[in-house]
Amino acid sequence: MSTVSEFLIERIEAWGVTRVFGFPGDGVGELDGMLGKTDREGTGLDYIRPTHEEICSLMATAHAKFTGEVGVCIATSSPGAFHMINGLYDAKSDNVPVVAIVGQQGLASLGTFVQQEDNLERAFADVACYVQTIVTPEQAQAVIDTAFRTAKARLQPAVIVLPHDVQAMKAVEPAAEHWVSRSSAVAAPTAIRPPEEALRAAADVINAGTKITFLVGAGARGATTEVLEAATRCGAGIITALRGKDVVPADVPFHTQQVGLLGSLPSLHQIRECDTLVILGSNYPYGEYLPKTGQARAVQVDLKPEQLGLRYPTEVNLWGDVKATLTELLPMIEQKADRSWQEKIAAEMHDWEQEMEAQAMLSFPDGGNPRRVFHELNKRLPHGAIVTCDAGTTADWYGHHIRLRNDMKGDLSGRLASMLAAMPYATAAKFAYPDRTVVCTIGDGAFQMLGMNELITVKKYLERWDDPTFVIVVMHNDDLAQVSWEMRTEDGNPVWEGSQNVQSVDYAGWAELLGFKGIMVTGDEQVASAVEEALAHRGVTLIDAYVTRNAPPLPAKITAEYRNNTIKAFAKGDPLGAAAMVDSAQGLVAEGVERVKGALHLGDKEA
Image 1 (cartoon, rainbow, N blue to C red):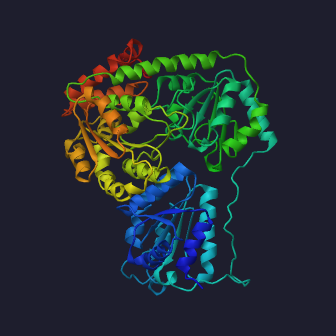
Image 2 (image 1 turned 120 degrees about the horizontal axis):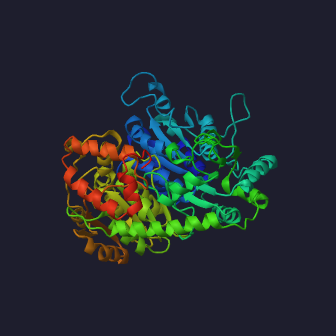
Image 3 (image 1 turned 135 degrees about the horizontal axis):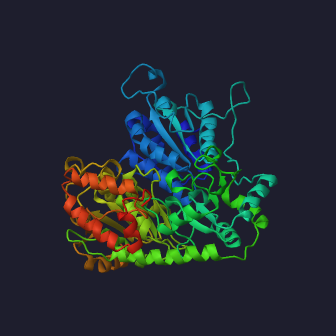
């Protein structure tokens, strides 16, 4: 009879898992030994070991996002287990299934304050939809199955705590006895369809609308065909949340990309003018960028019932899978002949794309234009490319300039607190799709967090990828730029260089030290050739793009609060104020006369 550790591996495989992201340690030593044994026998899991436990959990979350499978991460007891919590919160916030397996000290040590014996169930209670310690071999089957089944059904992380001595115990077949559960490695289907009367109520709302907007999130992934057919029938415009960017192809003319601080003006116009809002698989959190109460009738479709009707007072809430729900709803949606709303949206988006190009072609006196980097990259992305970004100003440029076509993928940590996810996401994407080009766009601050060390992971596993093309674009501005602009625009505070300055490093040189190609870009005129060279290279290339720290991440509509707080920050002695004002002025000039008028009109609260 096998051990509990060997049974765990077999059961994970029964749940369809082939790859895990782990970091070893004595708290999980027996399981590590069995993972090694099965690997040598050719029957084990594909065990990927990055450079830190936090990266394990971020990669597991990214794997779940890019593949739709359950992501699995493994770490030792309390030190390693605690390191994984941030990545698990990423999974929780972005509604993806992840199972974390963490070690623990032996059963006799529980509650006795032994070194590295901590209450892991309590530590993981908030982040996990299910967390349980396996204390007997008879219990192992039920705990493992419940963790996977619950993670898949609730789209949340689950945690299995495995004490060291239990790992080595002989596995047993659960008996038909009192207190003993016998479980199955079978998931419950999640293609939930709402009842017909609810679907009819939703169709009535949509059919009555004349200016309909779809807000599409990552929860609609897999339903692209149905979303487009529904929008075409009812003449809707489409906005995608940032994580839903790849759900709707960029070449759909009435897809206006994102809304909000890093969104487009056509998206904002849709939100302000629509009379009907249909939210599909999105928990978009920014209420100031949703219609005013009473402006629009609204329908929402989501697999997370607790998120229905949460962000906007929806009239019809449909608990269901987006694809399955739209399949049933489509025959009830009337074909509209009037295309004026869609055509208006498409025309505005055409103009917006010209404005984005004008913004990208600006020259700044104190460094390269970060928008230019993304503009040139976007023009050259190959078929099937996968793009990741961090949560700094990189996310602004990603939202404004990257256009994902039908065969491309893109994602980031939707928490937007996880600046450090870009490289773990990119590496996980490369493992999932080794034949595709992966591009990681990342700020220098984020690159110093979990990017530089993850190049070591890339080096370790590079030879196993069918196509080794892997491009890292580092936005080198020596500044935590997103936070610097937030200090100005949200709180009216000047930049504090003690917290904001990032130590300059030769990132291209670091890549070359590891045997990769490094390209240093110090001028806008070098960007296009650098991107072409990187994408043509069958290997790893790091583009070290020196850009200005003062390029403003201008929102589609500049509010009075944004403007006035920025003025306050400059007046308080912002050390970068002069350069930032020059760069901001140039950005405004490129935006067009009407938007400049709005930005400068002191009497307009909505300016």
